[in-house]
Image (tube, rainbow, N blue to C red):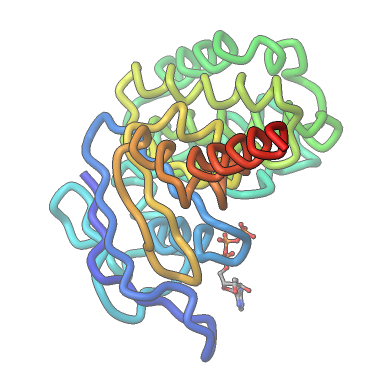
Length: 256
Ligand code: ATP
Protein backbone atom coordinates (compact mmCIF):
# COMPACT_ATOMS: atom_id res chain seq x y z
CA UNK A 1 0.00 0.00 0.00
CA UNK A 2 2.76 2.43 0.97
CA UNK A 3 6.31 2.34 -0.21
CA UNK A 4 9.15 4.73 0.55
CA UNK A 5 12.04 4.29 -1.80
CA UNK A 6 15.47 5.67 -0.87
CA UNK A 7 14.01 8.84 0.59
CA UNK A 8 16.36 11.67 1.56
CA UNK A 9 15.10 14.79 3.34
CA UNK A 10 16.87 17.85 4.74
CA UNK A 11 16.17 20.79 7.02
CA UNK A 12 18.50 23.34 5.49
CA UNK A 13 21.85 21.58 5.56
CA UNK A 14 20.85 19.02 8.19
CA UNK A 15 20.02 15.68 6.67
CA UNK A 16 17.07 14.22 8.60
CA UNK A 17 16.38 11.14 6.45
CA UNK A 18 19.07 9.11 4.71
CA UNK A 19 18.08 6.66 2.02
CA UNK A 20 15.03 5.50 3.93
CA UNK A 21 13.12 2.63 2.35
CA UNK A 22 10.03 1.21 4.04
CA UNK A 23 6.93 -0.70 3.04
CA UNK A 24 3.50 -1.06 4.56
CA UNK A 25 1.10 -3.66 3.18
CA UNK A 26 -2.67 -3.26 3.33
CA UNK A 27 -4.08 -4.38 6.70
CA UNK A 28 -0.76 -4.25 8.53
CA UNK A 29 0.23 -2.38 11.66
CA UNK A 30 3.82 -1.31 11.13
CA UNK A 31 5.84 0.38 13.88
CA UNK A 32 8.84 2.67 13.65
CA UNK A 33 10.92 2.87 16.81
CA UNK A 34 14.07 4.82 17.57
CA UNK A 35 15.58 7.40 19.90
CA UNK A 36 14.90 11.16 19.99
CA UNK A 37 16.01 12.88 16.84
CA UNK A 38 16.17 9.67 14.79
CA UNK A 39 13.94 11.14 12.09
CA UNK A 40 10.67 9.38 12.95
CA UNK A 41 8.46 12.48 12.86
CA UNK A 42 10.19 13.64 9.70
CA UNK A 43 9.34 10.30 8.14
CA UNK A 44 5.65 10.80 8.98
CA UNK A 45 5.71 14.36 7.66
CA UNK A 46 7.34 13.24 4.43
CA UNK A 47 4.50 10.77 3.88
CA UNK A 48 1.80 13.36 4.61
CA UNK A 49 3.51 15.91 2.36
CA UNK A 50 4.46 18.35 5.11
CA UNK A 51 8.21 17.91 4.64
CA UNK A 52 9.76 18.04 1.17
CA UNK A 53 11.54 14.99 -0.19
CA UNK A 54 14.91 15.89 -1.72
CA UNK A 55 15.36 12.60 -3.53
CA UNK A 56 13.65 9.23 -3.58
CA UNK A 57 9.95 8.47 -3.85
CA UNK A 58 6.82 8.00 -1.75
CA UNK A 59 4.33 5.70 -3.47
CA UNK A 60 0.80 5.16 -2.15
CA UNK A 61 -1.50 2.64 -3.81
CA UNK A 62 0.78 2.54 -6.83
CA UNK A 63 0.70 6.34 -7.28
CA UNK A 64 3.78 8.46 -6.78
CA UNK A 65 2.74 11.05 -4.17
CA UNK A 66 6.18 12.63 -3.76
CA UNK A 67 5.74 16.42 -3.73
CA UNK A 68 1.93 16.23 -3.73
CA UNK A 69 0.12 18.70 -1.41
CA UNK A 70 -1.00 17.54 2.03
CA UNK A 71 -4.60 18.30 1.14
CA UNK A 72 -4.51 15.96 -1.84
CA UNK A 73 -2.70 13.32 0.20
CA UNK A 74 -5.49 13.44 2.81
CA UNK A 75 -8.06 13.11 0.04
CA UNK A 76 -6.21 10.10 -1.33
CA UNK A 77 -6.76 8.33 2.01
CA UNK A 78 -3.86 9.11 4.35
CA UNK A 79 -4.53 10.77 7.69
CA UNK A 80 -2.07 11.70 10.42
CA UNK A 81 -2.36 11.92 14.19
CA UNK A 82 0.43 14.40 14.85
CA UNK A 83 2.87 14.23 17.74
CA UNK A 84 1.63 16.53 20.55
CA UNK A 85 -1.88 16.18 19.14
CA UNK A 86 -2.34 19.66 17.67
CA UNK A 87 -6.03 19.87 18.35
CA UNK A 88 -7.93 23.18 18.09
CA UNK A 89 -8.11 24.11 21.77
CA UNK A 90 -10.68 26.90 21.49
CA UNK A 91 -13.13 24.66 19.63
CA UNK A 92 -15.41 22.06 21.14
CA UNK A 93 -14.66 18.36 21.09
CA UNK A 94 -17.40 17.67 18.57
CA UNK A 95 -16.25 20.49 16.26
CA UNK A 96 -12.72 19.13 16.31
CA UNK A 97 -14.06 15.74 15.31
CA UNK A 98 -16.25 17.14 12.54
CA UNK A 99 -13.25 19.03 11.14
CA UNK A 100 -11.53 15.71 10.56
CA UNK A 101 -14.25 14.90 8.04
CA UNK A 102 -14.43 18.30 6.35
CA UNK A 103 -13.28 17.01 2.96
CA UNK A 104 -15.94 14.29 2.96
CA UNK A 105 -19.05 16.48 3.33
CA UNK A 106 -19.63 17.19 -0.33
CA UNK A 107 -19.08 13.65 -1.50
CA UNK A 108 -20.66 11.63 1.30
CA UNK A 109 -23.16 13.93 3.00
CA UNK A 110 -23.94 14.73 6.59
CA UNK A 111 -25.71 11.49 7.50
CA UNK A 112 -22.66 9.31 6.86
CA UNK A 113 -20.42 11.68 8.79
CA UNK A 114 -22.76 11.74 11.76
CA UNK A 115 -22.77 7.96 11.71
CA UNK A 116 -18.98 7.98 11.89
CA UNK A 117 -19.15 10.47 14.73
CA UNK A 118 -21.31 7.93 16.53
CA UNK A 119 -18.69 5.24 16.02
CA UNK A 120 -15.92 7.51 17.39
CA UNK A 121 -18.09 8.09 20.46
CA UNK A 122 -18.60 4.33 20.64
CA UNK A 123 -14.83 3.79 20.76
CA UNK A 124 -14.22 6.73 23.13
CA UNK A 125 -17.29 7.23 25.36
CA UNK A 126 -15.31 9.82 27.30
CA UNK A 127 -15.34 12.08 24.26
CA UNK A 128 -19.10 11.80 24.00
CA UNK A 129 -19.51 12.86 27.61
CA UNK A 130 -17.35 15.91 26.82
CA UNK A 131 -18.69 16.65 23.34
CA UNK A 132 -19.46 20.32 24.03
CA UNK A 133 -16.39 20.96 26.18
CA UNK A 134 -13.57 23.14 24.85
CA UNK A 135 -10.87 20.79 23.56
CA UNK A 136 -8.12 22.75 25.31
CA UNK A 137 -9.60 21.83 28.69
CA UNK A 138 -9.38 18.06 28.09
CA UNK A 139 -6.77 16.04 29.93
CA UNK A 140 -3.71 14.89 28.00
CA UNK A 141 -5.12 11.40 27.50
CA UNK A 142 -8.48 12.75 26.37
CA UNK A 143 -6.73 15.05 23.91
CA UNK A 144 -4.93 12.05 22.48
CA UNK A 145 -8.27 10.27 22.09
CA UNK A 146 -9.61 13.35 20.35
CA UNK A 147 -6.63 13.54 17.99
CA UNK A 148 -7.11 9.88 17.12
CA UNK A 149 -10.86 10.33 16.73
CA UNK A 150 -10.35 13.32 14.47
CA UNK A 151 -7.92 11.39 12.25
CA UNK A 152 -10.43 8.53 12.15
CA UNK A 153 -13.18 10.93 11.01
CA UNK A 154 -11.19 11.39 7.80
CA UNK A 155 -11.90 7.68 7.20
CA UNK A 156 -8.32 7.05 6.14
CA UNK A 157 -7.12 3.91 4.45
CA UNK A 158 -3.72 4.57 5.99
CA UNK A 159 -3.48 6.10 9.46
CA UNK A 160 -0.18 7.65 10.54
CA UNK A 161 0.20 7.83 14.31
CA UNK A 162 3.08 9.85 15.74
CA UNK A 163 3.91 8.88 19.32
CA UNK A 164 0.38 8.15 20.49
CA UNK A 165 1.63 7.24 23.96
CA UNK A 166 3.53 10.50 24.54
CA UNK A 167 2.95 11.73 28.09
CA UNK A 168 0.25 9.18 28.87
CA UNK A 169 -0.07 7.01 31.93
CA UNK A 170 0.67 3.30 31.29
CA UNK A 171 -2.98 2.24 31.48
CA UNK A 172 -3.99 4.87 28.96
CA UNK A 173 -1.15 3.82 26.66
CA UNK A 174 -2.72 0.37 26.54
CA UNK A 175 -6.15 1.86 25.85
CA UNK A 176 -4.93 4.09 23.05
CA UNK A 177 -2.86 1.37 21.45
CA UNK A 178 -5.65 -1.17 21.68
CA UNK A 179 -7.83 1.22 19.70
CA UNK A 180 -5.30 0.84 16.89
CA UNK A 181 -6.13 -2.86 16.89
CA UNK A 182 -9.83 -2.02 16.60
CA UNK A 183 -9.25 0.44 13.78
CA UNK A 184 -7.26 -2.17 11.92
CA UNK A 185 -10.15 -4.61 12.26
CA UNK A 186 -12.35 -1.98 10.65
CA UNK A 187 -10.02 -1.98 7.64
CA UNK A 188 -7.49 0.75 8.43
CA UNK A 189 -3.80 0.16 7.81
CA UNK A 190 -1.57 1.76 10.42
CA UNK A 191 1.96 3.14 10.51
CA UNK A 192 2.86 4.10 14.07
CA UNK A 193 5.93 5.88 15.39
CA UNK A 194 6.67 5.20 19.05
CA UNK A 195 9.33 5.64 21.66
CA UNK A 196 7.47 3.17 23.83
CA UNK A 197 8.96 0.21 21.99
CA UNK A 198 7.66 -2.40 24.36
CA UNK A 199 4.01 -1.47 23.97
CA UNK A 200 4.13 -0.97 20.25
CA UNK A 201 6.03 -4.16 19.47
CA UNK A 202 3.26 -6.10 21.19
CA UNK A 203 0.75 -4.56 18.85
CA UNK A 204 2.55 -4.32 15.50
CA UNK A 205 3.02 -6.93 12.81
CA UNK A 206 6.35 -5.56 11.62
CA UNK A 207 8.71 -2.86 12.74
CA UNK A 208 11.60 -0.69 11.63
CA UNK A 209 14.31 0.71 13.89
CA UNK A 210 15.62 4.15 12.92
CA UNK A 211 18.77 5.81 14.16
CA UNK A 212 20.31 9.06 12.89
CA UNK A 213 17.93 9.31 9.95
CA UNK A 214 18.51 5.76 8.75
CA UNK A 215 16.70 2.45 8.98
CA UNK A 216 19.14 0.24 10.88
CA UNK A 217 16.97 -2.81 11.51
CA UNK A 218 13.69 -4.20 10.23
CA UNK A 219 11.72 -7.35 10.73
CA UNK A 220 8.64 -8.90 12.27
CA UNK A 221 7.70 -7.29 15.58
CA UNK A 222 8.31 -10.62 17.31
CA UNK A 223 11.80 -10.98 15.85
CA UNK A 224 12.70 -7.43 16.80
CA UNK A 225 11.35 -7.85 20.33
CA UNK A 226 13.61 -10.90 20.63
CA UNK A 227 16.63 -9.11 19.14
CA UNK A 228 19.35 -8.62 21.71
CA UNK A 229 20.27 -5.12 20.58
CA UNK A 230 16.63 -4.00 20.55
CA UNK A 231 16.17 -5.46 24.00
CA UNK A 232 19.22 -3.70 25.32
CA UNK A 233 18.68 -0.31 23.73
CA UNK A 234 14.91 -0.02 23.41
CA UNK A 235 13.34 -2.40 25.86
CA UNK A 236 15.77 -1.71 28.69
CA UNK A 237 16.23 -5.40 29.28
CA UNK A 238 19.32 -7.27 30.25
CA UNK A 239 19.94 -9.63 27.33
CA UNK A 240 19.80 -13.37 28.03
CA UNK A 241 23.56 -13.82 27.61
CA UNK A 242 24.35 -11.07 30.10
CA UNK A 243 21.79 -12.54 32.49
CA UNK A 244 23.52 -15.90 32.21
CA UNK A 245 26.89 -14.25 32.87
CA UNK A 246 25.52 -12.48 35.93
CA UNK A 247 23.93 -15.61 37.37
CA UNK A 248 27.06 -17.60 36.51
CA UNK A 249 29.19 -15.02 38.31
CA UNK A 250 26.82 -15.02 41.29
CA UNK A 251 27.00 -18.80 41.35
CA UNK A 252 30.81 -18.66 41.29
CA UNK A 253 30.78 -16.10 44.09
CA UNK A 254 28.47 -18.38 46.08
CA UNK A 255 30.90 -21.25 45.64
CA UNK A 256 33.76 -19.25 47.14
P1 ATP B 1 11.57 12.54 18.69
O1 ATP B 1 11.41 11.11 19.05
O2 ATP B 1 12.40 13.30 19.66
O3 ATP B 1 10.28 13.21 18.33
P2 ATP B 1 12.22 12.07 15.89
O4 ATP B 1 12.83 10.72 15.68
O5 ATP B 1 10.79 12.21 15.58
O6 ATP B 1 12.52 12.56 17.37
P3 ATP B 1 12.63 14.26 14.06
O7 ATP B 1 11.70 15.19 14.77
O8 ATP B 1 12.20 13.69 12.77
O9 ATP B 1 13.09 13.09 15.04
O10 ATP B 1 13.99 15.05 13.86
C1 ATP B 1 15.08 14.50 13.12
C2 ATP B 1 16.21 15.54 13.08
O11 ATP B 1 15.81 16.68 12.32
C3 ATP B 1 16.59 16.08 14.45
O12 ATP B 1 17.98 16.21 14.47
C4 ATP B 1 15.91 17.42 14.52
O13 ATP B 1 16.63 18.34 15.33
C5 ATP B 1 15.90 17.87 13.08
N1 ATP B 1 14.73 18.70 12.78
C6 ATP B 1 13.43 18.34 12.94
N2 ATP B 1 12.61 19.33 12.55
C7 ATP B 1 13.41 20.35 12.16
C8 ATP B 1 13.17 21.69 11.67
N3 ATP B 1 11.92 22.13 11.47
N4 ATP B 1 14.24 22.44 11.39
C9 ATP B 1 15.50 21.98 11.57
N5 ATP B 1 15.80 20.74 12.02
C10 ATP B 1 14.77 19.94 12.31
